[in-house]
Image 1 (cartoon, helix red, strand yellow):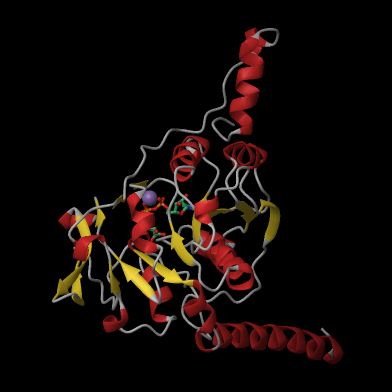
Image 2 (cartoon, rainbow, N blue to C red):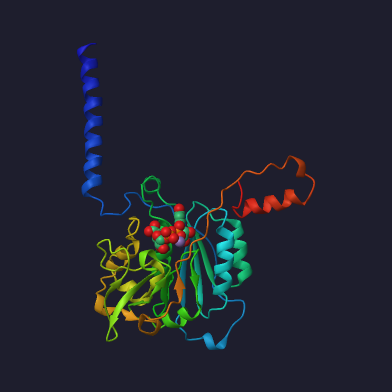
Length: 312
Ligand code: UGA
Ligand code: MN
């Protein structure tokens, strides 16, 4: 090797080492925990602002923005159909369905239009770095995209509520949360070792949390256990939801500069269950053999199922 070649090689190897070291140092020191290092991909797909029917008594009522993260799997359309039909019984809501995906699923758009609710359909895929983690922070990229939408388009007297696609909700919960000023809370059933997660209330004030998984959290609550006033949300400078599995709620509420004494108590002083952290059994995503059914209904049926994400 000539002297010149050795110098070139030294520069290439040295340069690569410096690059690797600098990016690692950046990773450790520059990013706040749970904050992505690259801009997230976000796609706005469709929306309907007005309900098909206009109901006079809804006028002047604060609007509730219900944010539902979802992702393609065999149960997806079943979950969204059940939840969406429940939401049609609620006054003054705007349903934001946020897909963990780079694109929006047509079967969801069709469902939203058929339900006739005011809605927004958007998509934002989980960055690959988080999908490779041992505990994957589920539904964060899509909730963050919805959060941005609410900050930009939400009415100041409105209310934000995160409702996962597999949960079960009593529509009376919406009457409870509609008056939220800063942050309101209530119990969530079917969670963890205590079968419930709830604020502890003494003389009408929150004094702590009854939750089987404290995990060092300041706010030991589930995603379905609180609502936020949009005006209050907009006033906060650093609103975020971290990509940290199990700490999404706590991270989000901490970013709102909230103190425990500000929490508004709902559901009869946190004595009633109006929402449940139900979970649906998972079905395998199958590839079906259809050789003998190219000329009958099964062909069309299975094409429709594929559109819904039920089969491969
Ligand atoms: C629990 C909490 O209820 C969630 O709010 C929290 O995000 C999650 O733990 C977590 O800490 O990761 P869990 O029932 O265990 O939820 O999780 P899933 O129901 O599987 O997912 C929560 C939501 O995210 C659902 O609406 C689901 O459709 C969505 N999700 C899940 C995605 O958007 N992408 C995924 O890859 C997985
Ligand atoms: Mn769930």
